[in-house]
Length: 475
Image: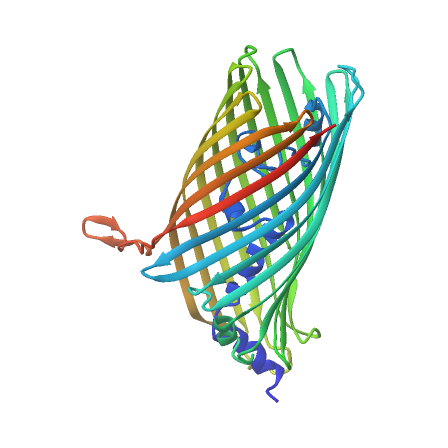
């Protein structure tokens, strides 16, 4: 049987451990909301300042609990979401495929009819399924995930001041396989599987105040506690990479209504996460063969202008500026510290994502029907740098040093219809089409004429489709 020291080294020699960590980061980012691939690319819906002009499976954002006080009637709703996306194609070969399905029930009800002293309660339960298939980068990879969770929120108004609290919990479990990952950690057999698990809790509060008849302001603070794990295992071997992430976000909001026809909303968000407690990479649950920790932060600014041409016609114009970065550091090392000649393999990575989004939406009511339209355009760029080394005593040898640049654009088109079936029953269907384009640029080089870059690697993008169905009972 090959000893632990060799197992620790081979985990790093074949391919950087950064790749599994990237998978884990993607999983942690998407799973708490039970979201599919398009949700990672789009701004809007619950948890976003763009919620008021973006199609989602719900118009209620329980993570902004004080907003529940604006409800004039209670509601009980059944929501279903179907999502499919073929992200990239190269010639006739599919590179990435993702699909998701989600079911959710929700309840919200405002109490008291007083204009100065009101309260409201809301809650939901959901379940989701997601699959991810790819033939590039993570060659012949198939991942399947199931999730479930729920949220509850309560809000109370005291004159001009409103306060709301919320809590959101969720859990996910996934299974899959990847021939490429099995080659990276070549001690694994060809039928080795990938296992993922996640538990997440988000909680916080929102406070709002009416400064005058035309101006109101709000503050939101949220704390996140996310614990996940990704394992690569066959009959004899099990490599496990855990993640214990803590973080949250803070949001400042401002609403100005110069007249009954216009409203202006501004949102300023700052958030981040870290696992500075050093999560240990383990072999067969007992032997610690390395560690990693990371940190990330982001800032976003959103502005929305609402125009009410009439009681039955409302238009929205929005802009969002997003900027975020991450930093990662870790090491794969021998288990037997007595044998100092065994090398260790430190690695580090950092990167950023910038995105700008413009949105327009229209809602028009005619008889028992309400029609909705939305168009959004996003553009941005991303950068990722990864470096790994081989260390013996105080001597370092570079094993890899990669820089990746990306340009990103996206078009979104949304169409929706709502029909009053009975006096207090509504049916809603929405279709959201997303067309992303991701172009990889080679590392910039310096030529006699100045900086230049190698030709971009272009791929054909088919885009994705999101179907949203809702039945709403007004109480």
